[in-house]
Amino acid sequence: MNPVTYRRPSSIADAVAAAGSDGWRLLGGGTNLVDLMRKGVESPAGLLDVTGLLPDTVTPTADGGLVIGAAARNSAIAAHPLVRRDFPMLSRAILAGASAQIRNMATAGGNLMQRTRCAYFADAAGSRCNKREPGSGCDAIGGFNRYHSIFGASPECIASHPSDMAVALAALDARIFVTGANGDRTIPIREFYRLPGDRPDSETVLSPDEVIMSIALPPSPFAATSAYRKVRDRASYAFALVSVAAAVEIRDGTVHDVRIALGGVAPRPWRAHLAEDALRGARPTDEAIAAAIDAELAHATPLPGNAFKVELVRRTVSAVLAELRGEIA
Image (cartoon, rainbow, N blue to C red; front, side):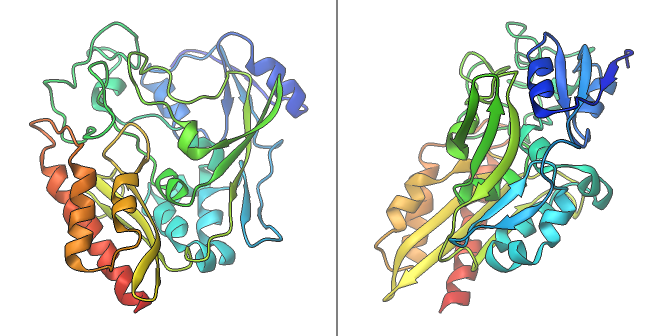
């Protein structure tokens, strides 16, 4: 790892000004960025440790939502009584990710910014990767692509997004509050991540001089009955082959509202809007659930190495929705 300058800015304004300088990166828990620096994937000119400047609390809002500070540790979020009671899918998603040691260090803001675990992306010395070096090519296409995307990929990049937490946040319609040189703004999580297109190196809509301050969860009448299920190659400390965050609200025997977000299958947390639209207003029968999932999967573009994910998505979503239906009934 190359020598790097480390700074602790005295204020957010100082951090924003420095972050706009060429090559400087913001540092939260460092569980992903420092690892990528060791591998030679990231070579920042300097690190700006902003953890002491950002809120680290989980705060209820008057309308029943929550605001999670960007410096809140993943383990603290997962254990918070209001998260566990009102948004259990978020707690379960966080606990499904990484190891206890990493969750104790990782921050909410850093989790949103973590980068793909594509092996070709991490192999800086030997593999072509358009995400790491635009225009160099993609060795994952035609290579070992068991963990890669079946939705939203492009001829330039088929990497999948690694976060568990972000999948639950996508299902909960979270909003991300940022501040930067041009002021404050709030970004719906559905607009936060870019699809790769012909610029897979550009992964979010954040500007280099913007800092994530907090994440807001709007109140949800049915998030208290929600679930997160992760399917992976081993029982712990593995990234998702497929994960599902879901919640269902049933009124008078029909689906009034439903949220389904998928992980491990796309370059960003994949909100299954087609499946949701198919289920709203329907009776939550096995047949209706299967038809809804098929509506989403009709747009999947699997590769030889990950074609199994189509059936895995079908079975996992079906199982999670059946579990929630049983809890509500």
